[in-house]
Image 1 (cartoon, rainbow, N blue to C red):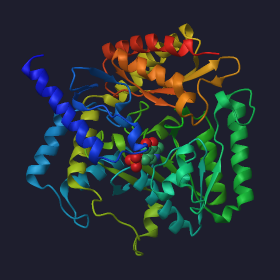
Image 2: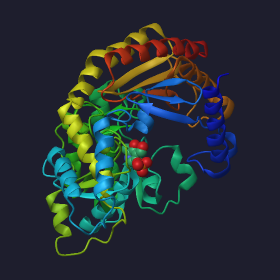
Image 3: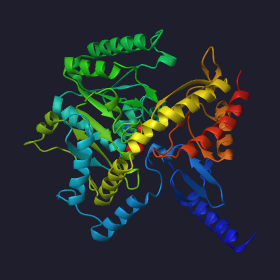
Image 4: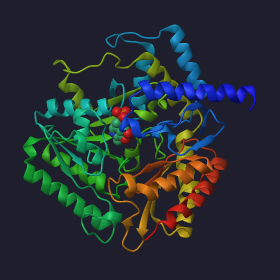
Length: 453
Ligand code: PLP
């Protein structure tokens, strides 16, 4: 080994040692994990201290929408740090005003006021608080197949199994089934029937809960963590109509799908639906500095025109995060990254992933939009039995663990969720890297095929 390799190995060991001793990791049994030590990142790749480069098909946690280390955004952060690194949230500041203006310009309808938070869960918490205060009603509805964050209200809103360890049953949340034609909770024969039955189920739930007690329906515009669930045409418009009928606010959670992920600025743009409140985070500045927020309709904003809003955060609209947002949004516009995401989905990822499904019997379904896709892996295509059971751990999860390991061995960092791989590369991934990623997936899927029943 040469001196440079020795130094890198020593650096890796030091990083891992301090991590093991002092960092408490999210969602993990601390002694059972072995986090990879990352040495650097650029564009669609990151690398470790041992010379392994990974094509990131997870965009970190689905947030590096413009890739890592975009030079215009890192320069904007440096410039802001040198000029004014922080200032209290109560002041009007150029870069915060500009970030809010750029976001408001892109949000659907007249959602023109922005409340800034540090991330997605806080955005959802505040949207729920706003909805409760605006309507004077206590309950909030959300889908079983959903993820809305890990703070107290947000994790109780969450439908998926990450709620189980936190379920206080006190957050005034009512869950319902959204449409999901591949695993229809309504035994529907097709998407149109699924949509109609899901809307009927939602209305029944509203009526039996008592509409006068429901402040908001919180919905991911496209379900992200629950499996890239693209709602059938008509569903979101139907939910909007139910909200209007019963005086309920519609909160669209665009934390994962906003800012180009699905090939439009916001996923709601695909269906022309305007919520009362819209939550964003992640892609707003590609996650370079923590930032999230809520865009408010004029009616909700008016509730707090002369009555103080009883909520706030020390770092609301932090100027470093806002500088990163301004630079990111400008880069996305200048470089046509939203359009690129749409094209990549329509011309490369969609056809490429469907071709993989033809070759690999373990792929039960391919679904997605833009640079946001999922492959549903099954033990049996006819029964659609998932390759691993819901909320699997340990030995039960072995087939997906083996598939994930094969992806990494090939040089692709996958986002594995239950029995699915979510394909969410940077929205500006090159055609060459899409092809490379598909090739690696092709090999890794043979491992999944071998685990079929
Ligand atoms: N809402 C959605 C749809 C998400 O996907 C996430 C995170 O993945 C959140 C909220 C929570 O965001 P954060 O982890 O920034 O609090």
